[in-house]
Amino acid sequence: MQWDKVLATRSTRMKASEIRELLKLLDQPDIISFAGGIPDPALFPAQAFAEAFAAAMTEQASAALQYSVSEGYKPLRDWIAGEMGKIGVPCDADNILITSGSQQALDYLGKLMLSPNDTAMVGWPTYLGALGAFNAYEPRYLRLDPFSNADPAQVQAEAAAAGGRVKFAYLSADFCNPTGETVPRAGREALLDQAEALDIAVIEDAAYQVLRFDGEPVPPILALEIARKGSIEDCRTIYCGSFSKSLAPGLRVGWVCAAKPVIGRLVLMKQAADLHSSTLSQIATHRVASAMFESHTAKLRATYGARRDRMLAALARELPEGVRYTRPEGGMFIWLTLPEGMDGAALLARAIAEQRVAFVPGGAFYADGSNRNTLRLSFSCASEAQIDEGIARIGRLLRG
Image 1 (cartoon, rainbow, N blue to C red):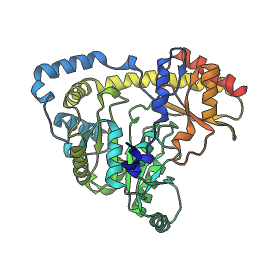
Image 2 (spheres, one colour):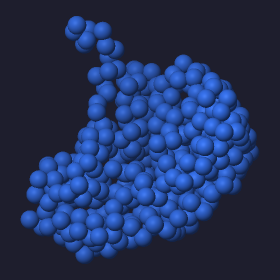
Image 3 (cartoon, one colour):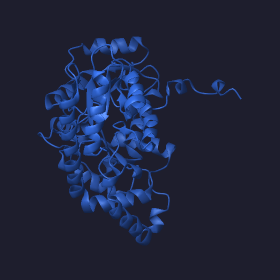
Image 4 (cartoon, rainbow, N blue to C red):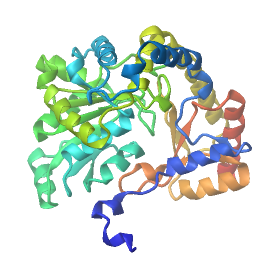
């Protein structure tokens, strides 16, 4: 069978994730890995989940093991709506759809909005998983700049000439993956102005929002738009949240918060794809989140914040002149920009072979594969000793 003859053209846009491949390095105990942007498993609330799953199977087994509604477990959606209200997004359970992680939400949104040759505006760099989700729907990409003074009519005209139109702007506004940077309030307001002028949607990926270590919190883009419009039902911003970084990624529980017409369309996507997310996981997530979310995320912020500080100190001590890096106020990542002419992928090959240390080359995070003189470091899953030694090894490699 020659499978290429029966595959859709979109399959040519789908590639293996460099990060997924790099995670295999974690199985090699002699490698210090700053590659995977994953939570530290030592911090998972394992006992709380053991009790929650046991209670769900004891008290709610018939519901937990049965088919359920596509929108998601109602008590969990009620709890999420309450949490959204705390950050300036008044809404109710009907504004919430539970997804299998926020990655599924990105896939659904790409499927919902992108036709071949449509334009998606994304950060430069941007989250690799978002590019993977959107690529299947064959878009072209345009660099997202909230402060751009480009003429909206001209931007849409160029999109039309390419065979489609601009459909949405995608960004992670808080401690984004991969750079760790945060979009300031002025940038968020400017993005809303730009989206209004272009008449496009805004996809706000808030996977790291609860992991702020210091600095002043900035309202979500959706909250700023509600302040303008008065109601979520009048908003173009679609908020994607997740429990992967706050509780545990293996639960595969995320959510979308948006105007009800958008949620209704996404429910149809959910029904066609997998009917509903695991009810058992949703019940357990609700039990744990409602009991200990605040105290647990406070523990995460203290631990990850200390590791960020350790890595920043090591970078200041070990890196040679000419290497720049971000100083995030939260999240899991620090972004390095190397001198022009250096290649992050080539450096990774040497780092593994010569120094037994791993990171993610930066070129993968650009829609056009440019800016190869960059790399991403994650501090979330490394001990302080590993951070000191691993950054020292990277420093030796760069100085050599």
